[in-house]
Image (cartoon, rainbow, N blue to C red; front, side, top):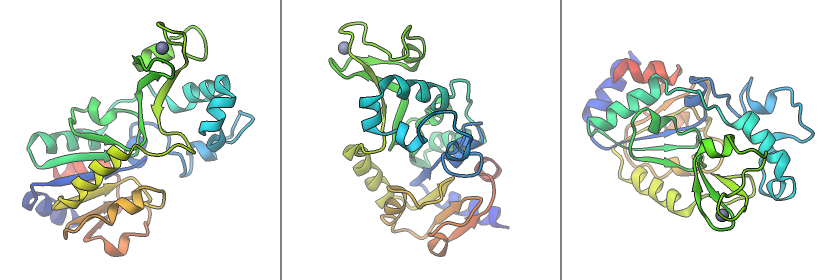
Length: 241
Ligand code: ZN
């Protein structure tokens, strides 16, 4: 029943925006940060909690430990796009979907073929020398002979373009996300509990009457949604697209 409504809403819309959180990547085997089984609830073999190890000050003060943890827990090189990523890419190809806004850093939307992806928290696939700004791919970081990847031009530290705790989000990405949400005729939100900044704030910019929330658990925005689907995002999207 809700899938029929969902399908009709998509048919009526031609400026759809998808906003996604970790829940879309868990279906590709990438653990969520906060839910059960997520990184924060796993038995931690490191001396510090993950939110400390993924902070800017930890990166500066304990660069080697940061990269050990980062390569061990944050990189899922063999993860493949799932049904949700593939359905969204298809919706963009049909001209209906204008943007994917994601809090994920894994690049799986692009791997599925999506073109306009706004990555609020950056991407493991972009890495820059902190000294000369030379860019490097993920393989360079993973294959570096030392734990801390070094620039081949100047020996500076190569830092992933991933937003760490204590670091600000990229203003340009936020502004683009707001623009797309404001002009969307349909907003599909999936795999996020909508409690963490900036997700909660961004949803408020949506002015239309087709707000669809796909999440297995309740969110603070359930009361505002025009349609709620309590199911897997991959299943929900592939059923209607
Ligand atoms: Zn350099």
